[in-house]
Image 1 (spheres, one colour):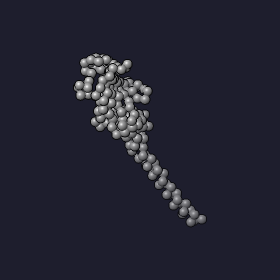
Image 2: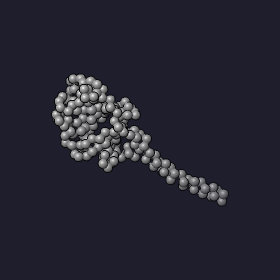
Image 3: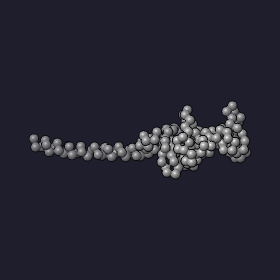
Length: 177
């Protein structure tokens, strides 16, 4: 009987170490960045505002009002799996401040039913990120998987946002999705 009690106490002590060890490993796994996401954060504070899943080859867009001619512009970006690349810009009207291939931006401009489409921009974004200053005009919207998300409503006028693609932890996904 005494041998059984001694063996039970040793087993019990080993079990007492497993639970904290399991919890520590679980906590660590929650904090290690592992999942690549589209992340919107406050540039000044670094606080993450929201994250969205993104796959290699997936595109999304930023729509805003051009500050000079006050028409809508939609910039389409692609996450290649390694780089965030500006692919096209769609302008609903043509005028001052609108880039053209002669300016060294893009390779072609086409008149479409939606407006003037500047293609062949193919500009990789430094650090896979964009900085976006929010104001009533240009009133930026993130166009993501059939949703138009108002960045102005999310962060307010005067906010400076950083939109990037980067690995995030499970904790970040849970708190900011």
